Length: 344
Picture 1 (cartoon, rainbow, N blue to C red):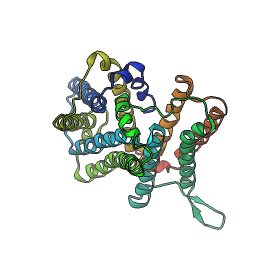
Picture 2 (cartoon, rainbow, N blue to C red):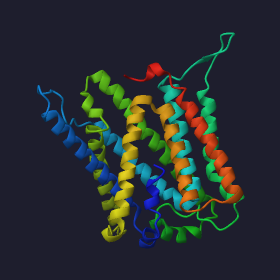
Picture 3 (tube, rainbow, N blue to C red):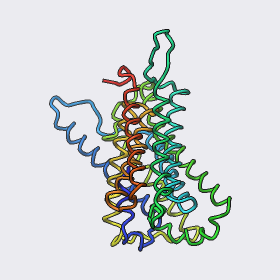
Picture 4 (cartoon, rainbow, N blue to C red):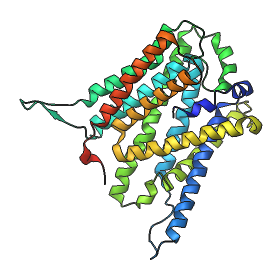
């Protein structure tokens, strides 16, 4: 998650002004392709078993389509928020919202277990919320402190998706208005909520499958689940492209420019999707989403430090301290999941 934008921020891609739907399309198509390849591989493996296995290579699940219905609009909302409030602010609001919604909803509403600690007098307390505060504080420091401390020319506020640069010209005329900023904040929050919903559906699908005796293959991220999600994402993205053209926009593929970096970004995002889905199925939403979002933000910052040279001097020291705080709290969160909650 923290690496795939590197391929989108190249000078060639920024100069091409590629429409955001094209990037979302690359992600969607590669998820479908990887899903089909995984199902094909499983089919070959099952067919070679002796004696023959009753297991299925592919089981369609509407929950995968439902996840796509949350994932694709989340991407659109995130894209739309960036020219209004900037990359750093949008990413921070997105990650923080997804983290907090996932943690508190699945802990307090769906009762995902957290490790309990007991004082000598018998009082029970939880450390996970404290670590969560540290994670969110660390993420805020990663984004907010470097621009405050580093007054030299920097590119932290450059749009993550180059096709938005043209939009920023017109939006820049209204940048000081409260309406545009409120729109940006609202869109970033919406993207974070939809991201939490996307992976929340993974947990709900797991509970539904257990109650309805659905074949386990339906929810396997290394097979049917990814194929179903990819199918839904391609259909929804295609519908969005049609709506964009109807509205007068002309998203063009520009394969000579977008094929390699778009595919690289799509493959990395697909890998992140597979790993996050598997992690949520094993560890639940409350802690896993915080770990995923915080780690993504740290890795994105590392690319900014090591590759783009965006952070220097005192700002780099502050960033390093915030990264250390974030990583320590992420590791601490991992120990707050009761071991009995993990399936064997």
